Length: 135
Image (cartoon, one colour):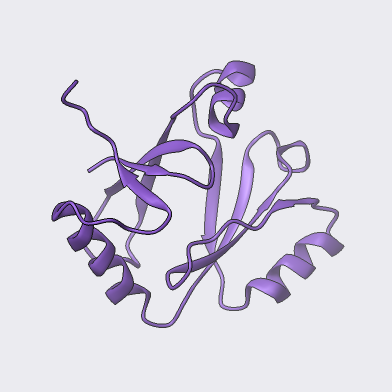
């Protein structure tokens, strides 16, 4: 199911690579939802391709501090309440892709399952909306 991630103005779907567990590798696929959004600007500048590499960490603040001491510049902290905290770093510091660190919240698997259930049922999810591909 494709969702609109309102905080970044982009459509998103997740493709799980193995199993259904949230700790398995996955691909997040994004597409611009409106002109001028961050995803759209990135595609306009660089074309389609791999834009973000994301790594799970146990302590996001310590990891972000370490990255900063290595010279990486933080550009945003966009997370999803009850699911994860995220920190993104400037692609100019990481060979052209955005490096993202993610710390999952306790209980994130249940939160993700509830989000998926609500989306499938057509119920509202704060921060997300379902894209209508019928028209």
